[in-house]
Image (cartoon, rainbow, N blue to C red; front, side, top):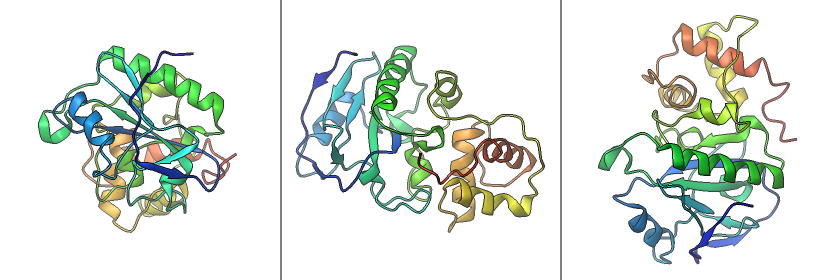
Length: 229
């Protein structure tokens, strides 16, 4: 078991079912201390289950059996109560507003250890390990293009595009994104969110050949991305 420090937040309520999703965020605030204060402030109406500092220290704010308030207005594969079915982890990082920077190795190692324990406790399939921008593409961009999703996938957490065995035409991109789980009501936002996660070298919201190939490489490996088990 990993070491945890407790900073209880009052911002939670009951779940109506089980957990089958893990959602990663960055704090987007000047410091971890400021973020912890906000997540534990009853006036903020926001929280997360965990916060990981850049030096790898892990804070537990809400028990996993409770519904933390981290995703806000969100959607994934037909689910609109993302908070109700997910564990939320905040990574201390100033974010795009306060000086976005890479996530240190100590922080990533702590995340890997925590995430593997969470996956051992809950039936979370790889395609439901997501970023805040995946479930709220018109509102959010965290954890952002500097987050190393490929490293997580190598550790057995989440997924990463493999080689596609079939072509995905540009006209099939939006249906494939929807099948994978994205809200595609805003097409450029959905494409950009996918790119931030799975093709972070360019996230312009344009469904180019490489974006289509990466999406094809993902959906090919999944019998049904909406299947939670």
